[in-house]
Length: 376
Image: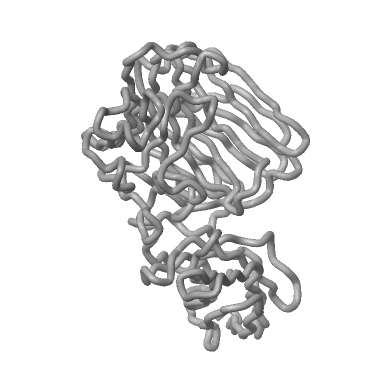
């Protein structure tokens, strides 16, 4: 669909290249942080490969390729040269934006051509940045055996709510799949047309990251039984996200680059982290009032990356106290086993705030003042 009214493009991946993140920069993580070498489970016939892991780094084991601005995520039999590391008969791929981009609410969309291979599940979905589950928001799932049926699902502590919609065969061409996640309702779209809607679950109110996934099931799962030796691919033209807030930080050339300051009258913070067993989280208070929900930082300080957070609390002319609190310090006894939060800078309307920069190495609060001039 067209960009929602009063929205800002906050993430734009056109797949002119593929930037993989191994923990030190890059757009897409090829594996979950808790299973960095790749992942599978007992219900699957496939292993989701991390091509950055040496035992599966052979060229014939890489499921990802780029051609003419389109990402292909291959489904193929496990090559003989990696069978010592992979016990499943198929290999597939998965990409996560967990270390480069998270967002609470907004419109999320991909344009893709999906696989109709038996046993395959094609998916574009969202998971919480803090590692909890539920909630989960499935923008789209399509089974290879039913390429003319959308499965659209929200998972929450209150239960699972699925929706289905009939569509043309998703394997025969590119289509857009999107969800508009608002505080009060979820609305799913196919090729710009609404296909399902429900109330937003009460616990679906925290930053989430995006995932592109294809997996191969087995005979005792909903995906069905794959054909021995089968191949296929999920092709992705783009992934985009929009914020409903008109002053949200726009998408940068790379999500790890510095981004412009927030609009006039709003607070912009640039933060980074040392990640260890999870990312740093923080809260913000202005003049003693907490603004919004806790946020998660994914830009790594060691990479000299920074991440902009824009708070659209309108600031009146005058001096205001800002408090940034580090919420989840962790330390494992060494420099490499330490989670820290860094306040790189702060600004209002592009004017830097003095005294904001700080390194928070424990659950602490940094106070500083911002001055908002009166309108000329």
